[in-house]
Amino acid sequence: MSRTQEKTSAAPVKDFDIELQLLIDAIYLKYHYDFRGYAGASLKRRLTTAMSRFGCHTLSQLQDKVLHDPKTFPALMDFLTVQVSEMFRDPAYFRSLREKVVPLLRTYPSLKIWVAGCSTGEEVYSLAILLREEGLLERTLIYATDINVHALQKAEAGVYELDRIAGFTDNHRMSGAPASLSDYYTAAYGRAVFDKTLKKHIVFSDHSLATDSVFAEVHLVSCRNVLIYFDRELQDRALGLFHEALCRKGFLGIGTKESLRFSAQADAFDELVQHGRIFQKRDG
Amino acid sequence: MVRLPGTSPVSSAASAIDAIVIGTSAGGVEALSVLLPALPATLRAAVFIVMHLPRERPSLLAEIFRAKCACPVSEAQDKEPVLPGSVYFAPPDYHLLIDKGPHLALSTDELVNYSRPAIDVLFESAADIYRERLLGIILTGANQDGAAGLKAVHRLGGTALVQRPDSAQASLMPQSAIAQCPTAHVLSLEQMADLLRTLEDGNALDLSHATN
Ligand SMILES: C[S@@+](CC[C@H](N)C(=O)[O-])C[C@H]1O[C@@H](n2cnc3c(N)ncnc32)[C@H](O)[C@@H]1O
Picture 1 (cartoon, helix red, strand yellow):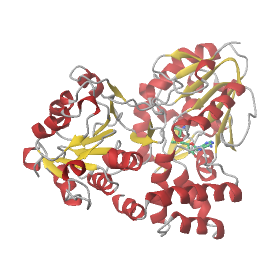
Picture 2: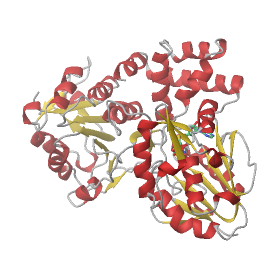
Picture 3: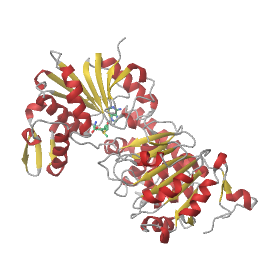
Picture 4: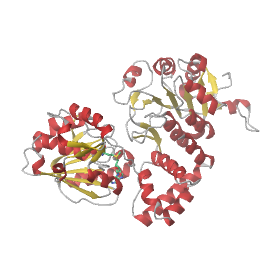
């Protein structure tokens, strides 16, 4: 890690900033992925790692590859986006959903839910399992969206390494689950394959919070650990989409360390669960 | 210290500081208990701290130090604007970075040096923003995180301080930092505390009396 860092910083960092902007513009013009509104510091760090991984000494060299070698951009997506996820990550969040949101969701005859930035699917399956446990999955459709196509494919497969299951099982239990996680997967060849009947209620699709618009009206948006990668302007755009997509008094769940406090959209939502990071669309 | 030709010894030894970054792991609570209470209430610099912690539990650091400090102390929140004279702790399981604004940024990127938060991540991003107006401090710890970060602080013109390894509860972290950043000033905790006390009313940092 430190070695890659050194390589960039040997060049004056100002050049790095110029090249960063040029690279991001090149990606936008050629591939229509818009990283212009991403939080700078962590993006720089990941691109520095990518440079050394692709054998480049400068971002300009990387830009050359991105434009002229068709294999580079798809591989670079795994550096531009962060694919870290867990099932029932932050069990307190899922417990709050169970206790505070589910009773209200029950009052609707049919439900639509949007998991924005679903990565490799862990959060989506967690929600589907929770809804099945609460008897709501049969009337629910979950839209699971992300910009990383590779991650979406994994999400759709719903297969996870068995060595991750112990952690998932602990989280699931701490989320207030009535049963064991093992009811929802079968183990084979070192992998856990999640119940196909969960998938019947999930639609996976490629959608960008930076460039796309609202596609459905939903009762709950769960967008966790995605907004931290956006700058304030892009965060406001995403929150605007959620606001538009949510039905009257719809719910919004965000990551444990994310907040609406520093956003222009802060007044559009009321905090439903303190510290639980669950909000409700404000009336009017 | 390296002196630029044509500058007087006094001005080259005194630097205006906008931010202080501190990294530590094993023994960190005790070391911070010496340093943080020394921060004057009229401090102008913002202070960012990464202390390695268990990743799965909430941290009590902000509560512990709030009571001991003249400055406001809190756990960093994503996109929070940086306030002068405030102390921010990285939350467990998130990297803390400084972004343009300046404001605080959190990330769940991969572990760095087996750690999240990682000291290198904080120091390198802060160095990029604050340049020569940054003071980087490496304290006691039992791994090598922070060494590359301190080097980046120095390379971009900031000031580097390291706790004397023989006075540290765990010496590997300060030793590694000195190995990668040999120009760092090596001080005891008490000397560092004295230095921090002089930062009152936005005073510049004057290292002319600090011994190496
Ligand atoms: C750290 S993961 C979060 C995964 C999951 N929500 C969780 O909390 O465990 C962040 C995800 O956001 C996705 N992402 C980044 N930019 C996006 C955008 N503009 N629109 C939609 N998703 C995006 C990334 O591809 C990645 O899968």
